[in-house]
Image 1 (cartoon, rainbow, N blue to C red):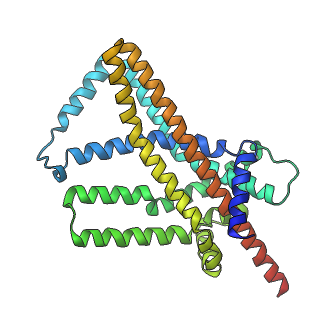
Image 2 (tube, rainbow, N blue to C red):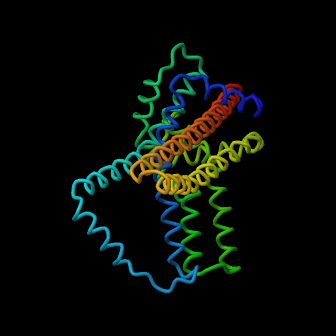
Image 3 (cartoon, rainbow, N blue to C red):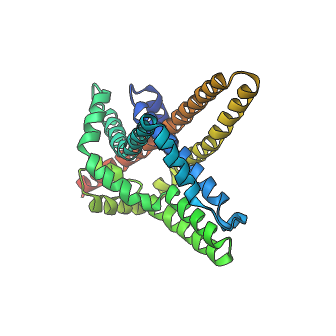
Length: 306
């Protein structure tokens, strides 16, 4: 298949395969929630950093407020901690599980299996969970979030300097190259049952030996970037939108009604962000899986010819 056909087929499978979208939307929902907290932390960290002229910040004030709140609202504090723990656990565990399920379902459809059910994807995700979890931990060092964390922390401490920008630019390029070389690693893990190290090696070899074909799928890399941008933009807009709605209704209606409406609007925006991110994630995983299956099929034919 040509790259355009792969993209077209991937988009069709994303929208037509029963239950496939849930493997992207559900983990994207928890990723969006964590993203809101992450962006809020970065904003707060920059605000109190020397980068914006802050000389000193007394963290005991925050500690005192938290302890006072916990002391006056025991039940609510425990509930918040439990909910935060559940969100954190699902944020780490769902993506490797669901990505394994997507790869398994797409492979089954490509091989023209008669009946493909979401339960089959859940079974495949469970079977490959540990190795996929290891992969997510390993590749996390080259992720956009990791780069953003290093970049923001360094800029807060040292500011913008030419040598720092050069170093960060080098790290960004190196991070991208590593991520690109390992793009087929999940497919080797799920479809060929290889261990992590062999999957990394197999992916790098497949990318290098099919560089033209992989390069033509560059559009998918751009789509992943678009997904990240959409998430970041929506994450920035969610607090602003909630604050605007709350301020409007608080100033015109009762305080309780304003807070309820603001929470409702914020929740709807979170669902929209998760839905868009989930669609793009399922689409990119599907497209890369179809590309891998085609390249693997061609490789097998070449081996048989020899």
